[in-house]
Image 1 (tube, rainbow over the protein chains, first blue to last red):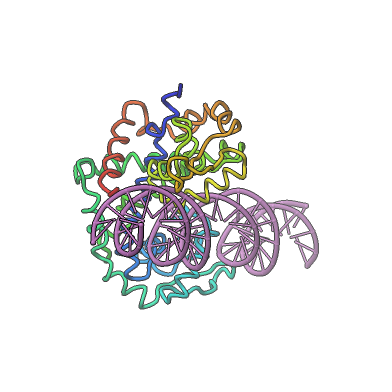
Image 2 (tube, rainbow over the protein chains, first blue to last red):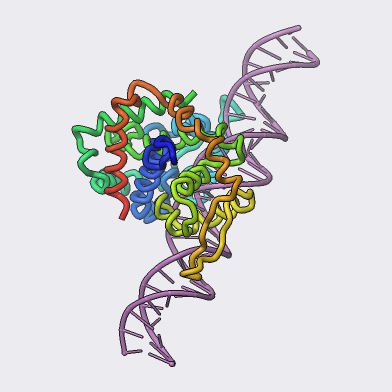
Length: 146
Length: 146
DNA sequence: TATATTTGCATTGTGAACGATTTAAATAAC
DNA sequence: GTTATTTAAATCGTTCACAATGCAAATATA
């Protein structure tokens, strides 16, 4: 005698968790080809929009903590994708900048969004319905981030 | 000159990834109180519906691999929540069963779904719109799982 | 029945996530 | 100007995810 609300099928979180994992897996072959992971790709998206940002700005943008982002950035530094240097105005800050290799990745990865997009395309995710889905997820995110 | 499709804000995956993480965080205080993690809670949901399942059935239900589920189950065994025993019909299988402690957790955690649910409640996630969101996520998941 | 293949689970190694704590620099309060 | 507080990153420890590989039991094939 299980309550309906306690069934796996009725859990919003399990759907989000699974959908997130499966889409990340769809990115994997496209990114690993260039030695990147999905979270590292997110960092690149942030830096391509605006280069030379402190760790904290990147973390805030991705809604992550610095203890997640710092080791990630160190790996990217080791790969020669970014540099990390002490801030001039504020010596506590570490400024993350793209290297040439990091900038060049932008062209090489231009087609990633539509490649993954077409893999995800289905009845529910088409140009007409996507805004609705985006809006709902944004509302959830805004509700939960403090 | 960044292409629109390459902006963080236009990425479906980033939304799913973030929403999933934030909801999991919302579960954390409710679950850690009982020494559970979110993936462990998912295993319990599966076992509460049907006890005594082989590792593979649990993994398939959660769309995870055994190399993720096995160590997770070992931790749950160490906590005295489940037992793991060799299958009788098929000696390769490991059958996972709830202990009394594992069964008792069901009552203690009955109110978890609505507690998290109310935390997630917003304009977009209300009884009327939830089915739409559920359906879209299901479509994405079905599209991507092979 | 002997060999090959498949299947169920485990092991290893890497990279996230994240709570908790630490260090040093910047700012505020006294 | 000294002390207290806040802030930016980093460190540590634990638990996922997951690719790759290994191993033994079950099944298929020769």
